[in-house]
Amino acid sequence: MAVIGAGAVVLSAAAVGGGLWLSGNDPDVPESGDVHAAATGCDAVTGELLAERLPGAVAQPREQGPLEGGDNLVCAWSSPGAPGGDRGALRVDVSALFTDATGEEPVTGADRAAEAYTALLPVRAEEVDLPTGEGAVWHGQVPGTAELAFHSDNLFVRVSYAGLTGQEPVDPEDAADLAAEFAGRIGESL
Image (tube, rainbow, N blue to C red; front, side, top):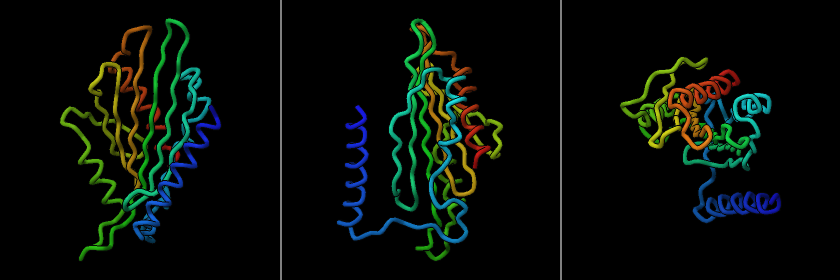
């Protein structure tokens, strides 16, 4: 299993690098005003927090690489749970967006992160209090799921949670609270 995961990471890295080489484009780089030079934040989801809130969680391979105008990091964990107990999945997607100086007026990475945040929010989103300030959470399309987004400097962060208690989806408010707890820990680490 580890060999397959390592092979997938190597192939992904080769594909990204090969695609950049073939297109003749170098990965975008941050400008001096961009606080974050790379996507970060997943390390705030500690084993202790996972053991408490998502028992038995197994980390999936992290994926990090260039994004048009930035850098992207995706981390995910899944918990099979005890028989008849809670089980769930958590996904964190972090994008470091860099300043775009190609137009007449440069658009800062922080402005790009704020725009991405605003563009994503559905009308049903509710504000949530996070250490970073502005954030919103909403119930996903599937019962027992919650989506949360926030931005901090030039980072745009999405947290997705899905859970089951026995065979039933977790309460939507509990899913939203759990997503907010993970997002709060990530926000504190930035």
